Image (cartoon, rainbow, N blue to C red; front, top):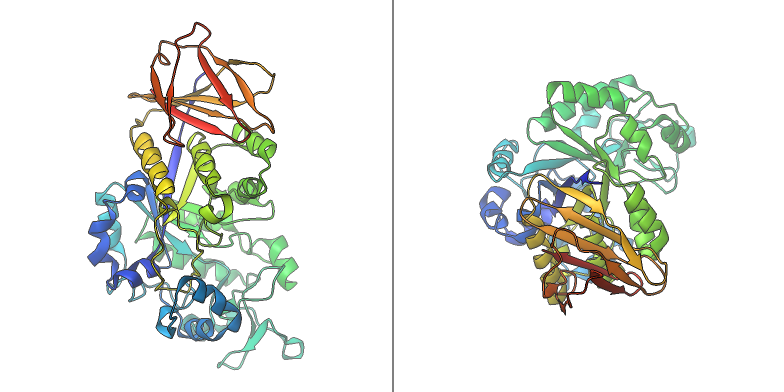
Length: 463
């Protein structure tokens, strides 16, 4: 039985690092971007970190001893100017001058649209920078702390009030941030106005730690009842900006909750964790029974270690597996080059890391294959005969222009068998495995196409 096959390819670029390394604002360096393989592969570009930098966040980032090893890991001869501050401690929702000298991002958004790409930007619902002028203008929108209950997660603002730092329920607060007070209904309306401004400049938002305003989470974190309603927020924006997207960074099993409240898609961190643990049975169960465009799946992003560091060459297997399933694939800048060093988000200058040519060659093959897919795609899970009665993942992806065959052994031991020929598509003397680049010579036998796969081995062929 054929099933419709849909994917969205989301490419994350750290805009501050991108512009910092180039020494120029975005509008002067975009022309080189559209020639890169990840850009051509992508449907949507997430420009992470475009909003105005906080001077206090910069000072804190440069002075915190515990952050220095991370900086020095990616930058020899570290200078203070290499550290810019956290893009998630937002001073205000206007573009940072490092990224662009324009008043907004509409012209940059138009450039992406001219290359048939959608633009995704950040929205951080939980907190702002401690020195944001918004706090002085609206002191009651932020979570005040009784002076008798002050502690390490609170601070005295110049306006005379004690406030809570932004935090989640499991860790201490982020010391460069101030917590929105979700028990105040005016916060929701203020956020809607921020989102209205953002929506004029892009096609969607990736909402940082989107579960933190939920009533049960805010209660657990701060002991107060949140009246913030994501459903109202999202409906209001979508009524005014049709097609505008809301993507959620979310953990703790709250993915379905946020999808129910209106988010178009949510992080699938559970699949990432199963891959990290090498739990092949759970990986197989997830991709076969829970694959759709509500899942944002990834091998790395700015919060995680690099895929090359975590998975080695198995990152090629897992990216191929994501490419064989309906979902949103989040791809991080540098992933295709095999970079292995995680870059702290505060950095705007780092040492150049050498390219891993095996990884780069794999992604070149993968991107080329995906780019040949037509808009109308279908997939079929294939029937086959296995010698040792160990089922594998066997899927055919059907395009107007070619057919792909993906075989993956999710068992703990070798599996082998035959896949029957269908419509003559497997009659080919030589097959190139997109994962490894190896060429396989096929004997034309009546049983069909023979396979023999080691545990966690994936083969990806195109016909």
